[in-house]
Image (cartoon, rainbow, N blue to C red):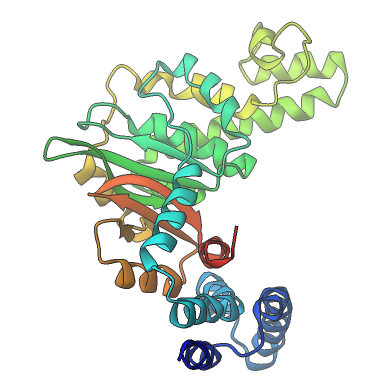
Length: 327
């Protein structure tokens, strides 16, 4: 009887993926390359250049990890694995990558220092708290730094809702946030562009020798600001030059700032704000199915609405597969 049960379970597993775990894992990068190449050829041949690359990338990634998803589903079906245990493993993995929180509003001249620790982060958390913790020009500074450096690639927003702190509002890419902030406020856009131009001028001056550099610094209105552009003790050009100059430029907004609360956040960023999340209190089977079928670039996790963490989309299927393997 036991052998009959094992045989029927094995057949159930074969119905999803009959080629084994190793084949599924090895097939993922192969499918990525093949599908990306096929899309490149089809786009040129059929004139599909106007199609959004974001959607195409999401579909390619989703199809590429499909073998791993099928292995996970096969494992759940054939071995009787508790979906709750996989759910717990995924939630723990997401929590490990929840990201550091940026300190609430600081005067602009002190706002650059916290950015130094974000260069290695995958995610940064901006907690709006009760709506008085963040200013638009402060968020502009954060997003400008992240967009220029390429890290972190994701900004997660949380806030207090109905007296509950840390509630998940959504996530977005810094470059998208930066663009929306500039479009919404011409004064911020002008300030950002002027600071960017100054930074480009300083870098040109640095390469032109002491004499021309001094003249150009004077023309840019940066005469006598060497401590800003070349901070001691090494007195080399600051790696955060753009942010130093932008912080100086936006300091004029500190006196009468535009505060960010949830309604203002949604008004500014709804087109680029991803609000979908996997809620821990949902049923285990439905939760796991939603996690494996979500084709988003990132998947956020919540616990009673409170932000618990976030994972890149492809990492979800991989973490689920690892949870099924024996320790």
